[in-house]
Length: 165
Image 1: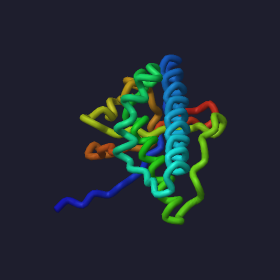
Image 2: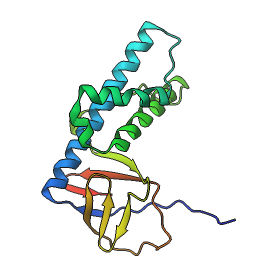
Image 3: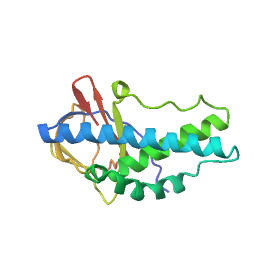
């Protein structure tokens, strides 16, 4: 049996102007989905104290939610699903007494979103990385990533004026 080791790499991205705009739009949409679904969970709990969040129930609400906000269809749908999973985890941890109550995301602290590698949607091609909705983004990789390396989840982040994956 082959043993798999999880390893993280942080690579600097050099997105085009269009790609920067899409990253910023995705960050805003992820923040909106997180905040609106958190408000929805709070309202449901206040009405019924026995209410418990089910992650797949929340994810199933996402297509209907996108109908109200059509611009959400322009960003990576997996990033929106992942933010719901993060919300579910934060909300559940609070009720298990493992964490504080989840806070609403603020624009100034809005710095990253996570997506998954589905159908080889994330891959390295030379000095570029293929990302969902963004396409090929130029990257600077100062170390060799093994050819056998496979991505499961990818976090696109902004630190100041720089972007990383």
